[in-house]
Amino acid sequence: MQISGKCKVANKWVDRKIDKDQFDFENKGSFSVGKLTWSDTVKDKSGKQDFVYSTKKFICFGANSDFIANNLSSYLNIVGNIKTESFTDKEGKLVKYDLIVLNEVSLAEKKEPINKHNQSKANGFVPDVNMDDEIPW
Image 1 (cartoon, rainbow, N blue to C red):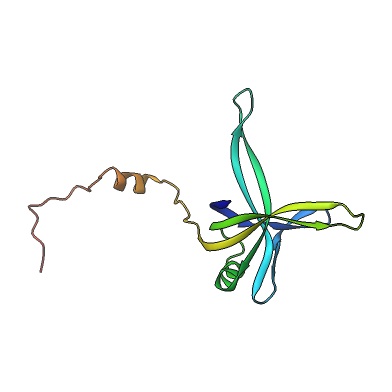
Image 2: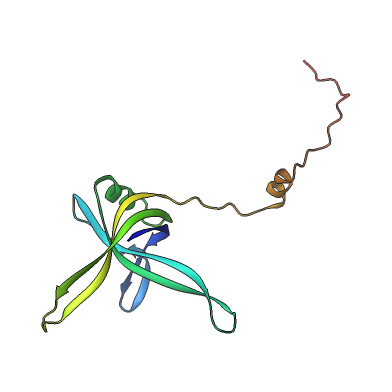
């Protein structure tokens, strides 16, 4: 199944707390592994809006690996495929997990906050200019 969207490399948990300076990313040479995190908005039964955070393991190769390593704290646009992987744990139980195989990675555009100047430009604001004034050459 294909997946695409905006996300970040997840921060690491250190001593049961999120460390905002460390990222869950490991460059293994020709490939990298880590975790991606993103949020979605959902509404409960009463209609109240809330955020739900999701985290999934990922793997990427080559240039995508280098790109992520150089942009760990940035929001990323990703395109990839979700695969279900499995292994047998020490107790002999089959453990399944989802893995995102990243095919494309780019920086997500950062939306500029709307300020009065930008809003005026968007609304076609033109400063008062007296067209009869001569332009000095």
